Length: 331
Image: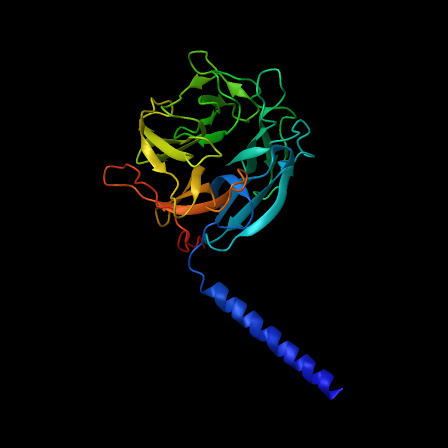
């Protein structure tokens, strides 16, 4: 009995020491590290909701296995919480595969999650860009329309890779498109459809030079920064370039590439989003890349690095790192 008691006491002491050591390690973690969370995830949409950073990525797997999405939140960019299956194909009946490239926006106390579904190759296939809604940023999300929001090829743009942008006047626009074409359309106030522009057109093409996919827009100092992905998504040349314009409709003249692979860090850095933390006035680029040792095209990881501007407002080339970004608490 004495030996058993001694073993129990020693086990308890060992567990306490392990717990204290674990807490000590966590407490000294000052940077996010890259990837910022474990797992194969791509096409990350980063945003701030309710004093938390959120990242909504594609689950990176063969198309037939891409039937759900997870989300992640953090109060400081360093410690992340995972929310599993915030949406899946049981909630969106018309999607069978390739549920990918989420975009999210909050409006009227609802969270609207947009996504691509089925990877349609022509107008005769069923799928395109869908929209789901939830009362909380972690979902669960339910199909909002029961059908795609955009289900056809307009101006040659495959209906994928959408981004929803709120303009200064309160208008909401959707930028989207694969196959080297990008469209912009104006959303109805309740997000149930598209409304025509003043000239009667529904979809305006705004494709810049070298555009492939993955559009993103933000406003800084009154200027419209339009960004997109170039190259092939499975190749080392995948990257991000940008333009600056005075209008959300452009013209978007390509300035240059600001995110790309580093042969010492990772390959194929692209399909990004941008988080602006207003308190510190820091800008973060959230993106995916492929580990140097990986050959599987689906092995993509979600990373974050800081994005800087020069004195003229141009974006400096992003230095991709293994360290990620420093802790930046929202609370």
